[in-house]
Amino acid sequence: MATMRTSDASVEQVLVNGAGSGEATPGHRRLSGGGRTAELAIDTAHKAALRSIARVVDETAEPQDPAFAEAGIYAMLAARDVLVITGAGVSTDSGIPDYRGPNGSLKRHRPMTYQEFKHDPAARQRYWARSFVGWRHMHAAEPNRGHYLLAEFERHGWISGIVTQNVDGLHAAAGSENVIPLHGDLSLVRCLNCGTVEARPDLDARLLAANPGYLERIDLDPSAVNPDGDVSLEDRHVRAFTMVGCLTCGSIELKPDVVYFGENVPAGRKREVADLEAASRSVLVVGSSLAVMSGYKIVLDAVRAGKQVGIINGGPSRADAKADWRWRVRVGAALERLHEDLL
Image (cartoon, rainbow, N blue to C red; front, side, top):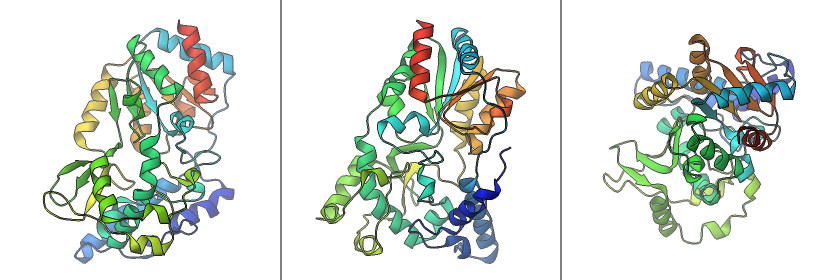
């Protein structure tokens, strides 16, 4: 379990309070849910989500000699059927920032929790205004060499499949077939009222029609786009944004079909992950600190089952102390080396 460094206490407080991110301070605001018991449950879940967002992953095990770690991970892949867990570190070379890296988006922005999105209309308005601007940068991102190498690893049978914590869809775009998007896919939007699903490009076309000239009034720095596809905007731009309704029921309670902090991974997706775990010999983490429990749990399951675990990451991982192999290296460089080793 990672511990909070004393030097990071101020960072945690900023994230919990929402300060410095252009947000209100929902940590100190009651989220309405229709009754005191419901409000308490919502507030409790919201605060738990804030703690997950603010988690700092510390060193829990000494980094291994790179050649030793590479050899161990090579042996795992050569034995075939490795389940790969990917995180934001795989997509940074596609221009999508990570959360917790040295230049991660958490330094400037706190993601919205599910409780805020669901129960605070002003927060939802803020999200959609910001996402309307930032999403097109995410939509334009293309797979990088690392995505293509992992797709090739799958074709050779070295890996059994990918469980990705990313919501950018780039593994599938690169040709990977057995991909489980653990936290969903930004390319879809779901109505919280009736369940209707709409393709995000189609919603974007409707938003463009409802907001003529809006994008031209925004001076966007692409480097400020966050991994969840939104970007900080001035309040006046948020207020000027017009949201459209569900095509079926007209509700404006539309949500990207992704798992927010404070929201559970769908049960069906958990079963898919469990099936892939059972069919795999070992687990390899690529480009993730595993700060979020949904990804970390896969490693815990593998350890309990006596399976080997390897980690390729540029910094510490929550699972370092449980891993057999820990390779501290840039993801792209490591995958290139492994590709050369295996051919």
